[in-house]
Length: 96
Image 1 (cartoon, rainbow, N blue to C red):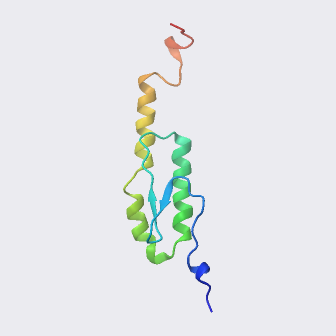
Image 2 (image 1 turned 180 degrees about the horizontal axis):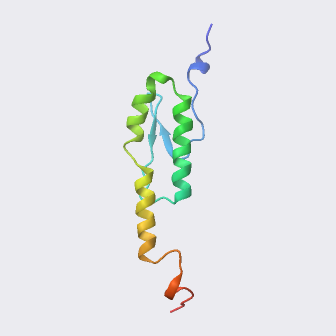
Image 3 (image 1 turned 60 degrees about the vertical axis):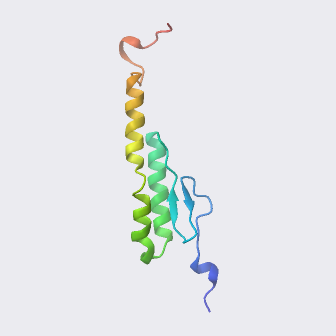
């Protein structure tokens, strides 16, 4: 006899995705993310996908596609670029 728990393994501490009623995970959309955070989101997605039955993979991928952490990381990088981050060159060390 199969245990119901064995069929419903859920990641309890997902940081960047919310569990849905149908057993999938909905991405939390962040406007800006660091490159490190982007990598963490992508790693979490791989873990979540691997925890799901193969039959749900395509539906889960479509949910993940609603939010692209690569775009958010790039937007954050461009924003920092407006302020010449990392601070180097002629503005480095200025206090005014």
